[in-house]
Length: 441
Image 1 (cartoon, rainbow, N blue to C red):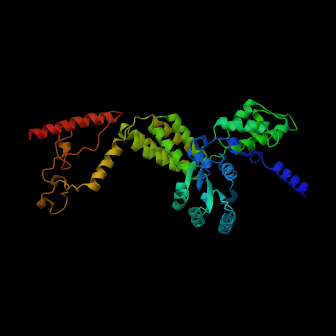
Image 2 (image 1 turned 135 degrees about the vertical axis):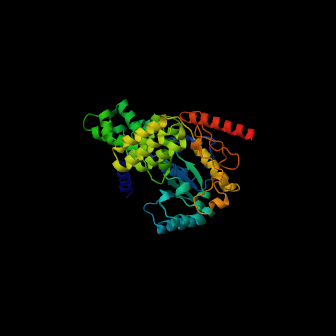
Image 3 (image 1 turned 30 degrees about the vertical axis):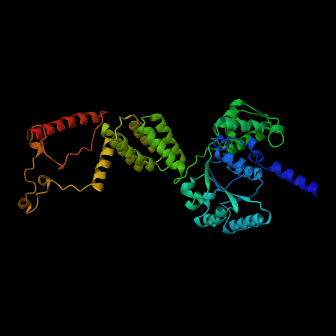
């Protein structure tokens, strides 16, 4: 019976994908996340002290969240139970929690309860975990690709330590691929296949820091040439890589982070970076109308009167996007993006309206000066409304000294960039004339 069991285990091992077979067996084999596991870091200190509590592992796929959870359970001699939030129901969760409590009471051994894709649990499912997390019956490790501060209930977040995983570096991924090629027990060494350096570089480049994706592509490439050329070249590597699917969640981090990078690149006058982030959004399936709206906002927020034409171009791009749609509207969006990125910048209008709103909200409301009030109704003259108003167009240069607010206040302060420099010069002259007129009075 033992022989049969051993043979079954061996068969199952060979049938597992390369990415599963190459999972690290100890912390020394774990690749990446040095910002979490280097000597002196919080997570490493926690493991060394064997004082683990509940944790949320947050980051892109293929960065080692599941592998590290298993290693933590093994290193700290705890039981390991795994649930996937896409398949587990309330009944499954309650069963694992009850089993964990029973083991803790019977032999004092705590259970690491690993929940993959924990953000897919409903609020009620997450709430079920709280009592056992609170009293330490389990050490919860939740893995998620979604920002836990948005996707998890606040009580669960407050009771857990959040550790953010980062995409693996090119060196990290390349090291994993080389290790898989040289490993005879778990890897591909026995296949006797040669992988060209440029093919390996391509697999690394297109993995986007995802170890699972890289190892899967390598396995496909190697197995496809085992009975033929015995060489993985650049063409084989290209065929082995699945079509790139960019991560995109219309309510998640990528949506907001890439949009933020897009606007900040325009603000920073970098058209090349702006185009890259524009391409990222469009290729990921972002609604082009969202991009167009951001351009219209940026035209006034970041450029304003330094180049008034920017708002017209952004608005035209928005209208074109509404009318044409993808894929053609990418050209309109690119034109507006590059124009805004190359335009002189000013946020003077933006800061001016916010300063005025702040006064309206927090200061005494100013009455409209009598000479500015409406006099186009019966009885207005009896009240004196509109008396002594001076019509600027009657003046030689279209301006006359006149108080329009009732108190001295300066909100709009044009910069000396682009078209706004002309505004700045004209306003300085008008303000000088106003001060001179007040002194003469």
